[in-house]
Amino acid sequence: MDFSTIDGYQSSKERLKSALVENRVAHAQLFVAQNPHSTLALALWYVNELLGHHDSFSRLVHPDVHFVFPINSSPLVKKDPLCGDFMELFRGTVLENPYLSLNQWYATASIEDKEALIKVDVVKELLKQLALKPVLGAYKVIVIWGAEQMNTEASNKLLKVLEEPPKNTLFLLLTHREEQLLATITSRCQRLSLPPESAEFIAEALIKKGIDPSKATDLASRADGSIGQALYLVSAESEDVQFERLFAEWVRAAFKVKGDASEVITLLNWAEKLSGLSKEGQKHFLNFAQGQIRSAMLLQYGAGELVRKTAFADNFSLTKFAPFVHEENLLDLTSLIEATLYNLSRNANTKILFADMALQMTKLIHQPPRQNSSS
Image 1 (cartoon, rainbow, N blue to C red):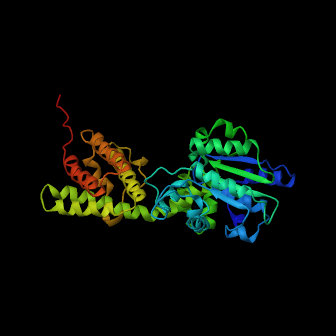
Image 2 (tube, one colour):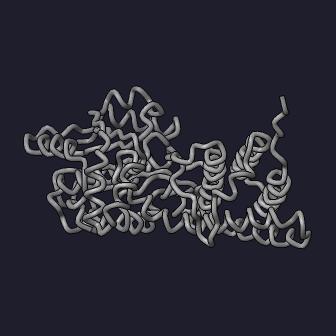
Image 3 (tube, one colour):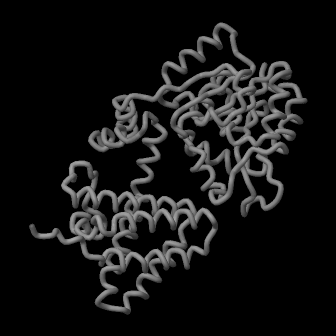
């Protein structure tokens, strides 16, 4: 991939280019962004400039560039994982999407249900690489993505290296949670804060990529100042259609159970279908469902202008669902999904968890609203 084509970051790019031209490259730099989709893409652009657009870096196989990122055991590596064990997967994922967020990486690496960390063994492995001289250029470059995920032991090990850095070695620490880094580490880094992009700029970038202008404007307004976030929203829209169908199936079956007990089987089959999604997909659906319950509440209380979408896949209408979300069950509906999210994070049996959630919905949406007392 040609990383020089990465969009955005204009003021940051100018500052970094100026430092390169004037040979003022700090040995340790900290890229800080508000949005988790933002830091990696700029770092890839910067390293590409630093290495003079070397062909091997376009394939992420440059021998002088080393990536460190949060990991945990997974079906790929079941015990004592190191970043090198995931490198082939990381390389392919980043080449496909340089705006990758950590959550997307965790899902790709099948570690979204565990705490992904950068442990001291990873840093020790890195130090072995630092003992070697650069092969193709003047610098060895260490990119630490998700630097806030270093545990204490790893942070202290890295701190010693930053205090006495090897010659011709550049450390790039990338984070969107600067407050979680050791202050002693941040104090030894030259800090670069990545400002958010304007919605107009993001919309133009999306239009160049073939997105319909009206759709691009809508996505840009929800992108939190990040092109990466906007591109994620593009890919998430197809996922939303799947979630719309799941939500519609759940609500319709929950309504029918009152008049037809055999619909319980439909709900149990629905729960099994949901349990077949990835852990990240299950979380996304639950957050999606919680959002639709809030939207139904807004429609019910006359604030429909705040609702982005009411017509779903499979001819499901949020407007028709709205009267069944009211002050008597709103808190319980919200608590139901929050409790399910919590238990999901505790590795509960998903078939049982989602079956219980599906069945509880039948009771809650049939709960009548409070009757206004006559004066």
